[in-house]
Length: 405
Image 1: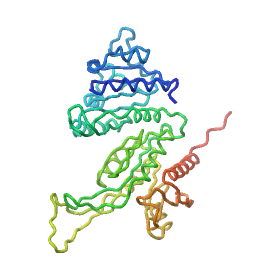
Image 2: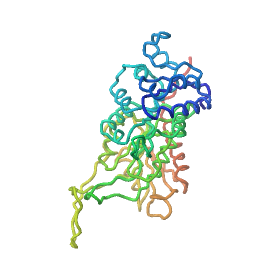
Image 3: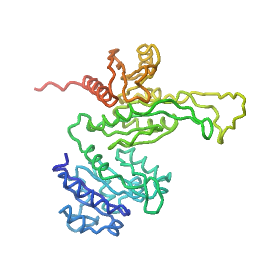
Image 4: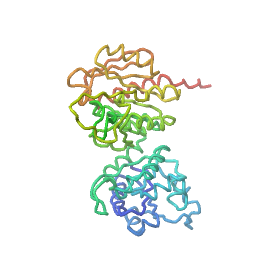
């Protein structure tokens, strides 16, 4: 897949810079032509000569390189993908702010190819609200984020911040460069899992959703070449490779994450089981057991699909309906009420399918009224069947080309 592809590898001043050497070797072994761009800080950890020997190409670190007075433009035009690994907190801040004070940041502003960032930093920096704000800003303009791993850090702490494994980064690179997929250029947003609404500091209102269906849809869309953002409630599932993940907990957090991205979303797959109600008042501390009954007043959570429909965007919107009776009737009612393009409904009262299971059995109904039941299938297989149907609908709706003269 990487044969003949030109990858620009940006290396910044992280202790993890040495890992970029192994990443460079793996990229070249897979046939990629790799040009390395280093920041001044990166050269304090690894010498340019190391990268030059392995890539057999010049290593660049100067915006005003005498060999090419418009180097940042030349590299940007030649690149099929721009990967920064590791990307420090400082790098994230400069890119989010649009700074262009060195070769790497100028190249990022000039790039018209896909851009991937693999952050690496200490856990306290990774979890800082300003770092997360910068990540959200970069995701919002289409930059792919390869999340760091948790584990022992250079500071002696244990937590998130370790540069993602080589295999994870390579898979993300290949996914973004996949040019044969039918959804290349599409931005697919998938919601998955349950949401949680706090009763007090330790208790929540939630549901039995495992997130497996949403995660399967995200992976299937990624394989088709789409840029995928997975907005996920709390789950125990591993992070899908090559997918941007936004973790949320409440219905309101999921609502904000969806609406912040809807203008740039080609297809929205609302597979999450969003809580319909939340406590009107949530206790900041733990409610003590008294032996007496208590009453909790519930109020509706935001209607995310309703808000999306009201925006009248060009996004293809897919809803999901978990029902226990009158499956098709209730699904059709929801399809029209929410102004959806497609709804996927399943009967969660049946054992062995639906919530928490690896299989599901669904019925798809599109806005023309066509009803398509699908047999019991593994959720990953089912995800492909759903995306096949979406693709067919979208192809039918494309205007015919003008007749040749």
